Image (cartoon, rainbow, N blue to C red; front, side, top):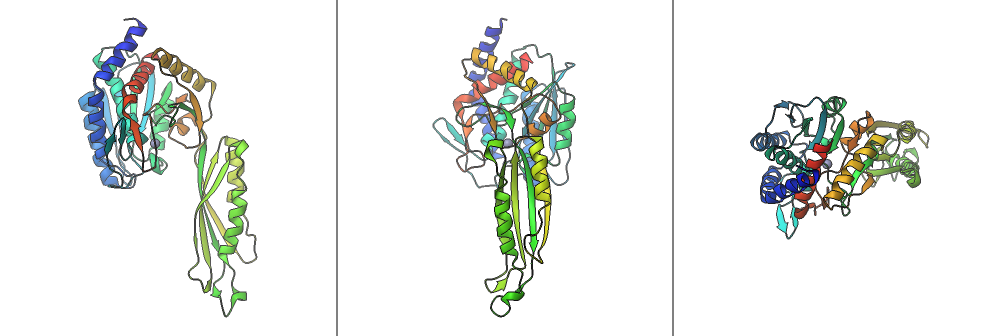
Length: 381
Ligand SMILES: [Zn+2]
């Protein structure tokens, strides 16, 4: 079969099965899976394992057991020498019952439908198309579905890195850039810190002068922290939450803040982390403690990632899809794989809008298109 004919065959196969993809996705989204609820995440994982087994010819699968977070699953498809890793997380940021599943025209709304259950279903169907159409897949595919991405992938990170090291390339089925549908070739790195401040309590009326105000110190530190932001460098510091004090008539003894750091380079990650971890009290008699650090390293675009993107772009143009690339601020598990030097292409999942927001939805008419892009990319690599 000619290459163009193959592309058309895959696309029409997936278009013909759009309703089946949707049905699978709806069932998957109905199995709600908030990261911190192991029981629910595991139920969702069991459904996903069943779905993979029903839809695909699987060489091997493994449930990676966890005690605190949900179990992860690893599916191996095909027998080739070289390996391609696909990563997809099936946990979501949504508490059970928070969002309703609903369809409005071309939009399908639901918890985690875009981030990133839609991407997992698209990728699964891409492989199904290859298998059903008996197209030659020369590579071994490892499809790793992890359960804790939205809470930092602390448990799954080692498995992701382990499989990435054995792979030629990593494809991440996270959502495409909202609006443009662009792929993500670089992402900022992210860090989380906690600042704790202790002063001394005193009666605000009788002994104001004896108190050491922890909130006043926190206020000064917040301004200092926010000033570390440098947009041209791509560095942002966000003091996201503060708490402290015990009552209006008490000089506050304690205050704390949670801080989010985003950086574009490893160098900047180190520089700012050093500053934050070494904050010193600005007022007398204050005690201060900072904990935390980088959670995900920056995903910096390499030449190999560029080649991978150009390969996807060439396939897209034959499918009449205009495909761009973009650098984004949010992190994903692609940050881990890129940081250990494996070419990583991210944003290959569903198109839509509203990740982590109440209007989270996918564009239904892009499902078959993006799935066929993914299938062709797997064949080409
Ligand atoms: Zn995600």
